[in-house]
Length: 300
Image (cartoon, rainbow, N blue to C red; front, top):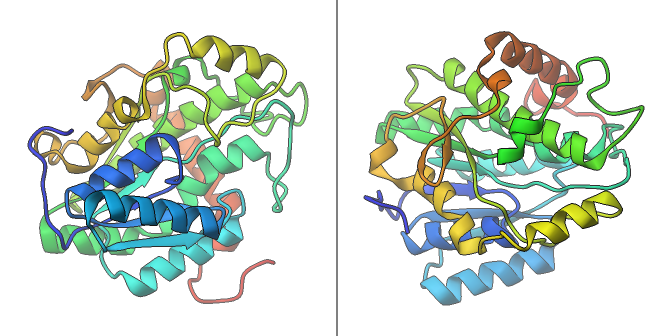
């Protein structure tokens, strides 16, 4: 799929939300290129099933599944520490998992679900895996963080006074905001990783048909039903993720947003460093109980 791929059986890639849709195809294509591929899954049986399917299609035995709920910061931390303990280097992290919800729900940690699952989990996971990412960059000359956003980031607005929608919840609005957060995060991360060899990019995969990761209702049912008329296949949708994860054409490219394997234009807010830093600081404060110090007991 990608142009000018970098193939190395010793390289390790982690893909979140890899049991269906573009996440599954992304994991499949990385395995096909010889990467050791780590998958995350909410369900161990489903994760094992996908792992077996990828192995059968690619002949790649270097596959692992890590089971946990990405809406739970405790699970995110546990999976990250398990990965760190087993893999001192990580060449690619694809923050792919995402979902939409018609009704406001809260996670076990009390966060609004869309915010926690689509954005905060990626923020925490990435920060916990910075050490192996930097270690990989030292050895191989580079490592990559790829964050899957959506073109709907252009419709996103940061509700700084109520970003978890305690009032006037809208599934569409919450989803759009979370996708804007993905781009803001990717841009802010690229600055923080300058000089380390670790790059950070974000992307719009294309309009996807409904999948198991999307649990809409009400207005969202209408939105996703209409999207089927312009939806592309998961194979097409995964192309830009795989391209950013592997292609030599984007080696060293960081802090950019891509559409169809080309630089695109996200929401104007995404380029606002003030907004990037505000979100980063807010996120750090929220995940502080699960971030440091590594190895000590955390909240249940």
